Image (cartoon, rainbow, N blue to C red; front, side):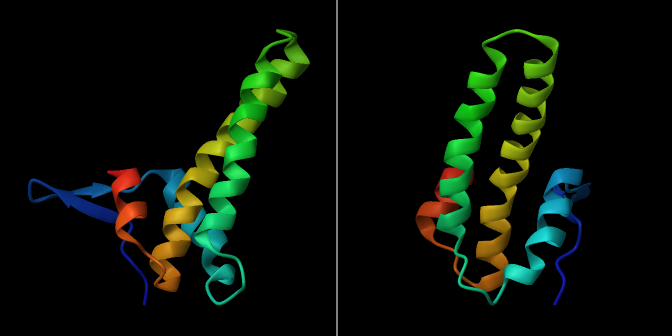
Length: 99
């Protein structure tokens, strides 16, 4: 069963961001695997600080690496929730962290 690419806000449809839609598409194959949403959260907890550290040198190369890591961190932020919803592993704590 596929979830629509939009939600409603005050009765009007709101399309989900591109990175949330991409995350859902990428996570689909992991639905019945051993990978849990907590695994993805753990990976993101390393990518985010790595992005911050990559900005420190201030060079063109490192700024581009940092930007890519930042986009990856944002994408990973969506993947844990998407995997939880797809695999039925949602929790009250996970929902609260996104709210």
